[in-house]
Image (cartoon, rainbow, N blue to C red):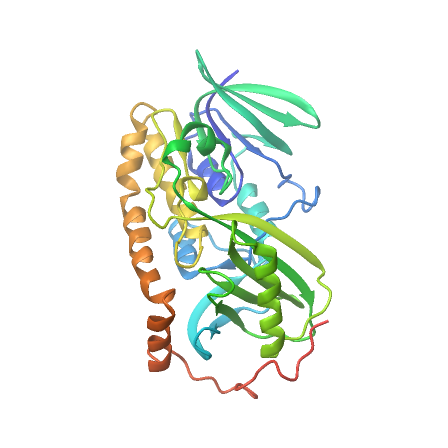
Length: 368
């Protein structure tokens, strides 16, 4: 059998593309996880599990509504912004869906039509050019398997094997590693914490409450002693009033940041979507909305025919390219401590809070 399209990665980008492709195509979808059986192989995505308004809007445009079984408490209506550089704190209104990320991915895969061949627990080994298009080699249960496809799509995230193999010379993205730990807690705080501290990272860190757990994470420069910087973050949060002890689990994952490089869409027979192509916010690392939008753009382009799809794809993703450029410009204010301090001191767009003890919300709480 020769597949028309092989998709590498069944996360939000890959699952969305597989669902939207015309049924006349023979499609194969690979993923190293088993997203057909909840938590079967213990592989989880290192992710805060927040669905931002842009992603919510795109899901609505795609005719989807997030099931209640995917959502977790509490739902979040405020961002608590802590600026250690300027010793400032502000609250800003923002509406996130707080969710279980693994269940979210499983739900998206459950929407894929039966006409798509799902290959779960399969790790990509190589993609090589052949007469029919490409030979895709992957490892399943310790055995090497091969399939052929005319077009191959990389939806395999920041460490995309396809991007590395076919477009390495164009890859100029800045590399970060996200480190995140989970702690037990008996409190439920309805806000998301965004933390800025140039001594820790030139990006940002976060705190999230999720089903009796406190998540503490940071996007850290890979080449700048990330573990030590993460320990520094936790030390500062303790001094600020957060209380936590032994973590329940630790996670890590690479993150790309398109600061100067162009987005990589692929070529006439290889395409990249989602973070594999650099579709991610350089200001917040939000990637779900870009995953949905890039997958939708590629699906439309392929459904019009495989011949010349890349040119149509490049045209359709121009609004995403402009959006990323705008967010790069936003970085000038967000990540310059002087400008950020001026904005926060002004109180522009900030929200007053009225809950008890808002001057130091965590001073009386204990995280186990």
